[in-house]
Image 1: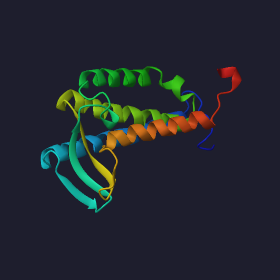
Image 2: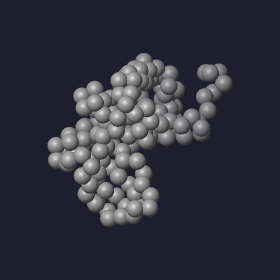
Image 3: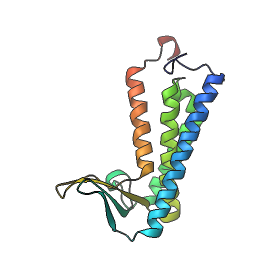
Image 4: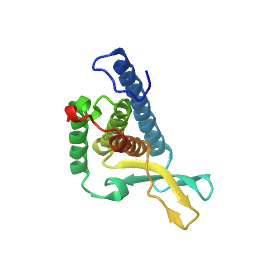
Length: 172
């Protein structure tokens, strides 16, 4: 059997993909929370350390909004939105995957990132960000964290899967 074949409901292969996806998502959640704890404890706000000079810094900042500070200041709204999105992923997991293996990891990566950033909003009042990609002082990408990477990767994999994998007509 190939990785790309659809999974049979409750099969050993489905359980294996689910366990691998859960472990990957859990490891990312742990890495996300540990790195945020590290930066909160060891960096002052705005402190920056060059990792690859001119390209990558670790810069300790807090984000009161979502991506690119959208909805900045609406922490509780974003927390509720995260809880609703996470709940929807859990409740409709099997329907959303449509038995495609890559969608298991995609959805669990998204859930991992949602939990990581929601935890920050609930217990810190803001999201802890620290990865700062830039080019010299010419261009700067918004500072982000591991949870953000998990969400973006999960959404990207899910979108590609939806684009290239068509549900058979009889199952729609």
